[in-house]
Image (tube, rainbow, N blue to C red; front, side, top):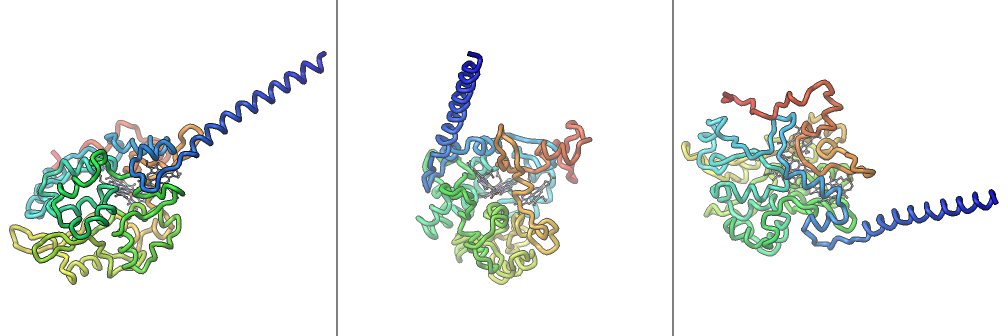
Length: 344
Ligand code: HEC
Ligand code: HEC
Ligand code: HEC
């Protein structure tokens, strides 16, 4: 009798664990069975398959302070340094220039900014909407040239405030990283790098270099925009210099604006994060480190390990910060005030 009881208990146990593990497998299958359509723009749809990544991505809309001097709160960046109104007189950057609010808000922020910042036309949407490649394809030169609002109105209604989206960096069928912007593909060709032969680690930087670079807007005789390019012609992979960029701006007359006070026509070097990061002398580039290594650290969500999709100053990542500076208290944030010359 005792023997039978044990066997029955064992059988019960086995069938119960089969049932439980069966359930777990089921959930797994259901999750991965979702296919994301090839041209799906809506991150919510991608989020059905990757809910943890979607949650992390949504955090880009939260305002943060943390330990960094870089804020994410659209604070005015001209008034603390009033000389900028004079240096950029005649140019949108001298009208309004604010701290960003994070990737998910980039298009909303652009819609709110003073209209004179968007005088260049539809071209300004190139790094702000996942529809940019499609609009350029459909409209040709008009995409660059036509007024900002007119080109913006061609984005489907429901996505007219949508900022960076999964499709900007991922192929939905394989989830491999991919380059969605023609600008970077052309830029890579200019420095002798084949955009179709890139390693995974290179892609972990180049996904960001689609937008975190300097660029020049080519203009026709009437001053209308007719294209956008990365001025990298004098550079090489791992050696794009600011001197080379300035030389190209001069050689090709990529002078986009006229300084009102001096009457001087000038070019504009924007935010060359990729260029400076990959320039000679960059310790981290030499060590094969990528943007994502610092800006998308792995984090645990339940039993899963994911790359963080909250793009911000790594100093704001509390888990990382606790490891690097365990003694520093939360009260000592530097995020409250700019350390600028006009700090009161
Ligand atoms: C499609 C263009 C695009 C891509 C791709 C992109 N960024 Fe950005 N990034 C932006 C824009 C635009 C802003 C400013 C956001 C705003 O205006 O609200 C920004 C802001 C940031 C900020 C500051 C955020 C804040 O809250 O202050 C960081 C950090 C950043 N990006 C890092 C990255 C990293 C790392 C990658 C690659 C994994 C990347 N970005 C890819 C366009 C892009
Ligand atoms: C070795 C680590 C490291 C690498 C690699 C790195 N960054 Fe950063 N980045 C930082 C740190 C740290 C800060 C913030 C400094 C602070 O908060 O004072 C920062 C700041 C930034 C900011 C400003 C953040 C803000 O809130 O305004 C942007 C944008 C940015 N990085 C983009 C990039 C891009 C694009 C790449 C690759 C081309 C890259 N970074 C590579 C560590 C790194
Ligand atoms: C600015 C570019 C960018 C955007 C936008 C982006 N990702 Fe990623 N994603 C990355 C990078 C970089 C990696 C790391 C890839 C690697 O290591 O090979 C990654 C990795 C992943 C992975 C692989 C697992 C992991 O965590 O490393 C998944 C799944 C993923 N992303 C889902 C999403 C989803 C869903 C969205 C939209 C809500 C999204 N991503 C938006 C750049 C991006």
